[in-house]
Amino acid sequence: MTTQDVQGATPTTRARHWARRTHRVLGVSAALFLVLISASGLVLNHADALGLPRSAAGRWALTLYGIELPPIDSAFAANEVLFATVADTLYADGAEIAKGVGRLVGAMAIDPVIVVATADEFFITSSAAELIERYAPDAGGLMRALGTDGQRVFVELQHGYAELDPGQMSFVSMDALPGDNVQWSRPATPGIEQVEQLGAAALGLAINWERLLLDLHSGRILPAAGRYLADITALALLYMCFSGIVLWTRRRP
Image 1 (cartoon, one colour):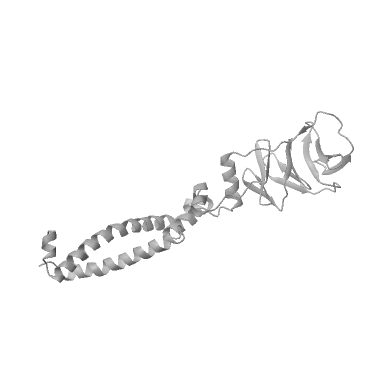
Image 2 (cartoon, rainbow, N blue to C red):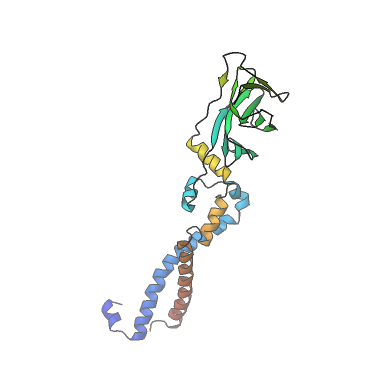
């Protein structure tokens, strides 16, 4: 049927032609959305088996949701393990160790343990960074730095120094260091992957693949536009149902 034929046709014929064209266009558009809904729903049915609740979607997902990674307060490395504090929580290579933790002042590997210190606490971990002991000594002031001479652990205080025995969990103050060969722990600079790992850990994997697919499935992944897109698709499907019935009952002569 040409354009001229449609213009010269009866109102019923023109309405049927318009319904046929819109039915086709809306059908293709809605089909794309339905493929997305069907595929995401199929994957969500097996979310646990696929490990989606335990898999972070990545930093790009945080950007999609408009969420910024929480800042790293402090970081030190010992025995190739990155110890860092984010939102008052201590992490070792992204694994949570303890909550309610202040800024770190150092981390030292003293075989067979690792000593991590804040201004008022010690955290003794295994060489694999598993927490063994949390110890808050009566230091008589804040601790400023953590060091070692290779065998013993020393702490710089506001006034003087102290020696920590990780095995006996003893803390002895002293006026001066026993020698000048003490190496002090220095802050570490986390890499991009470590920053993302710590951010995901601090957020508790809030943006995991299961949540991402759920929001994609429901249209909530784009807060306002997503809902409107889902509404438009639903209306399009309703229109296709009615226009399809009309086209079927009023076949072309």
